[in-house]
Length: 360
Image (cartoon, rainbow, N blue to C red):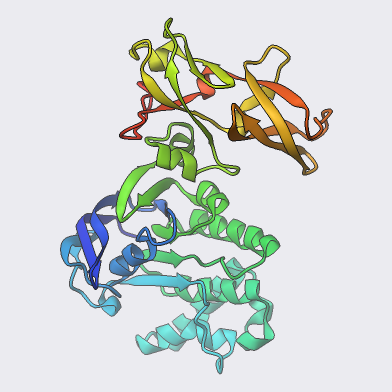
């Protein structure tokens, strides 16, 4: 397995600048996940690493080799697509063995590797089936097996679970996590699914308009977003935002219908009256008769172990996560809420960058 280093990767497609000088370094054995909205450049970046797209400028280094201009076959990279890309006329066994046969690997070695991968992915019973005889989840495991059997330096995944239903996505996600743990492989994974991103990644890379907006351990990026964009993109339901200001004592931030206490360790340098954008996640509020967030409830969604109350605070749309076994409010009621100082986020209204002095 090898480390991956991208330096100054720029790519245009027609008149559109897709990648705007991407710098990214992945350690050997690291699992990095690229997330971002549609059109932000995730798949183009992955295809550039694979050699399917050539950058206008910048370098791609795999281990100690500069592979920027190398064809895909010379990069020792395996790619798993969302479309499975299996040969329909070949059995699972032959699909797994196909790439090894092209490389002239000894037949005994091929048989041993195919058997090893089949055990690893629990597809031994499928070896003599054709792709049309399998479910989507089974076909995706075979597609992963075809990549694993090659023992490449780098694995690339391009939204491999997007064609699966929710239950199968959860199942195959666990298998990918298990696969990474057993192989110790370097993996770069593209997804639009936040659950996949948060659960799979050692490092989360958030892209915005062809540039890296923030990267780091998933929990760190979630808890200390560098910008309003990252804060609003990560989390479901999305973060609630308010235009407000620091109060005259510099101990609170206020907006219509809302007052939140500020953590002095994070926001002590903000002057009284400073304009801010206040961010509050739905999961960070709790009902409190003395709470300073006044939610006018419009819709309640019971979901078993939790519920979501949708409404407005000071005329601004607001969502609050509630315990599912608690007494839930009714539409039309007012629900006072509070949020702990440690869970408040503040952003500059102009630059949209975080104002948190304690952000890592």
